[in-house]
Length: 345
Ligand code: SF4
Image (cartoon, rainbow, N blue to C red):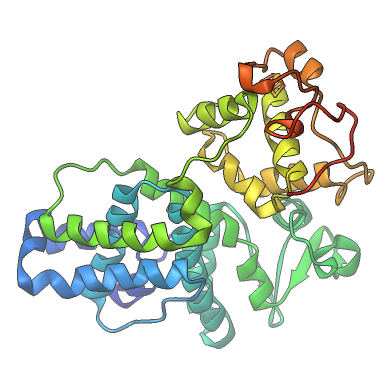
């Protein structure tokens, strides 16, 4: 099928498309212009996009094309300048959910030709998934389905609960769109990370500082701005991650089981791995849930003993370790053993 051009009206809905980049070039804005009063509304709109996403809501505005396309770009710049990965990720998810909202509407109400444009231009071109329309339903190859849906929690997504025929899984429009949410989130997240920021206009810097102050007050993001006392071995894994390096498997296992043992949730543990260059949200979540016993054989894994951590070359003992035998005892005295049950608190 030949590539179908998206119209300008589509770019306000899907500003991550390549066509939106070309449109921005045509507008020929320079960043310096954003210090002018006439552009303040675009910066405010970008800020609103970010805050709406961080609050877990969907930004629904669709006023005028220029404002929507340019505010998306400015929002990416602001999130990049803030440099807090969890904010980048949450913002990316918010934009993905906005796209999802528009796609759901389009796949329900638009003409067949228009639907084909969407299925080709977004599903196929961006995410290499072939979606075929058939009698008001959509179908995808089983392999394409499993690659995405096997990470969803609800039983509803399990292959045994789906209609499968001739190697295809049948879906309604909302399910079809849900299938690409994670990839779309990653796609936008990548765009943020690949941005190279030069000198920013003062007006944008001021707004980034406002964003920083707001994020610092938010409990979910506080850990990025405060130091927490973890055992040296765990601190070391966090440092490796914060430098954007990949820790070895044994170090990841230590970090995850330690954090679960002290009462962190699966979500919180997954967030620690966001900085890893090879981070994949679905895979990380699956692995962390596996450690809690929610997946696989149901075995619940505990934090390895100091002896085991040392044998894996992950021990960075200091005086503060004070003869403990398991990292979960750090700061609590010598009682306990490597095979102790996970503790909370
Ligand atoms: S002694 Fe235990 S807690 Fe301390 S760094 Fe080594 S493994 Fe970690």
